[in-house]
Image (cartoon, rainbow, N blue to C red; front, side):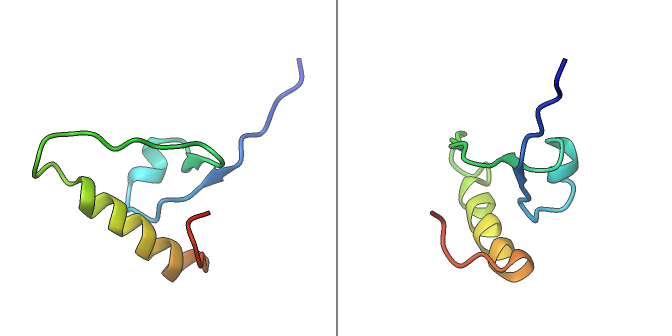
Amino acid sequence: MERVEIHRVKTGIQGLDNLIQGGIPKGNVILLTGPAGSGKTIFALQFIVKGAELYGERRLC
C-alpha cells in the first residue's frame, strides 16, 4: 500500500503542533469553537503572529 504524505502547516503554538501530528493539514479549514473566554481569539492571533514571525507567512490565503 502506498503511503500518502500529508503536508502540514505549523501553528507556532508551543506544544500544539506535537499534539496534532506536526500541524494543521495544509488546505484544510479549521473552525474554532467554545464559550466566551475559552481562548479562541488568542489562538487565532497567536497563529497569525507566529506564522509571520517564525515562518515568513505574509497573508492567510
